Image: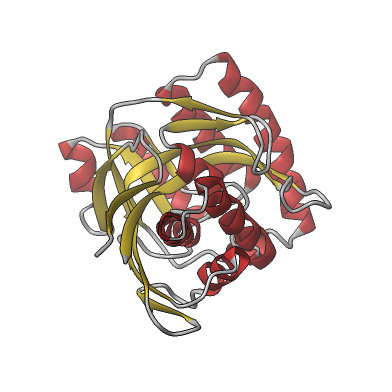
Length: 280
């Protein structure tokens, strides 16, 4: 028996870190975009008693943790990620969610279990705070309250985008342990969310995301220079947390980004989903 699932990559524009004693309530407030590139996972039940994970999964520690949370055995997982890790695309979340969704479908478990197990694994491993629930939701999303049961508003948008990797990997773990950076992130992120709730347009999302990246200091000099040049052409901002940018597509923007590793995509309004299942 096999099942295949897809989970979109997710790009956060601005955010506020929200820790809680209960990991289910830990997460983030803020806003971001789900994109049509992401992670595919095929789950297959076989005769063994362990879990085997294959594919371009990096260390795969988050996915392993999430599958263990589900309490299943005798499983083979194959994962294909379309974007790199540690570049602000939420790939640890999307690959894990795709794997748990396919697994839950095979074992007749509710999709809520896939979201919960993936979120708890991300929080435990300090690789993300809100990407799982947002990848499951899709669209341009607003995280009004954190956690698995938090409040999320989904705004459906139709727009072609381009994302590009500008520099070296950025380790989410290190940032989430820096108390001074967390304070700056929370102060600026809270203000950006208030402003976005007054004008929930895609254009305002990009404007506030630029503000967030500059005022928090997350954008280094190289990133600031690229963003300043890109915004002379159109709309572009930094992907949180990574040395990458996301921009509204145009021929001029694509030409500007051609020297970087770049990808064309669209906003994904569906969110994570099971694509197919085979039951012989």
